[in-house]
Image (cartoon, rainbow, N blue to C red):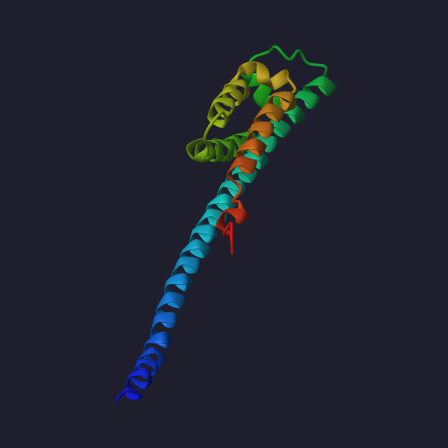
Length: 170
């Protein structure tokens, strides 16, 4: 009987040990999958916001380009730039301008909805500048560079940090 007790203990441990190891491994795998899923969500959200910012930048540059092209055309004609909006419609491709402005408004509102910190304020300020009647005969790129800098800061702030999912100690 005395020899049987250590044998029984060893047999029970041999049966239970793999079960406990498997259970602990499953808990670890679940935690790792959860961290991977959270990182994937952050990456997707970051990429989506980056695409929104790129669309906004593209549409804004298109509107500025159309305004500047009309301005250059008016200079070539030797016209007075302080004339009415009717004249401004003559010298810019007005249909293309309206189309670009519509896309700009959509991209502006979407970016405004997802942005945080100082970016909404800068977007609204630039939007007011863009809609000002004086923007027709002005170079808007210096004003737009301020918005671009703020967009870059926003993108850098929201970029997923891959090290936050690494354990500090192994």
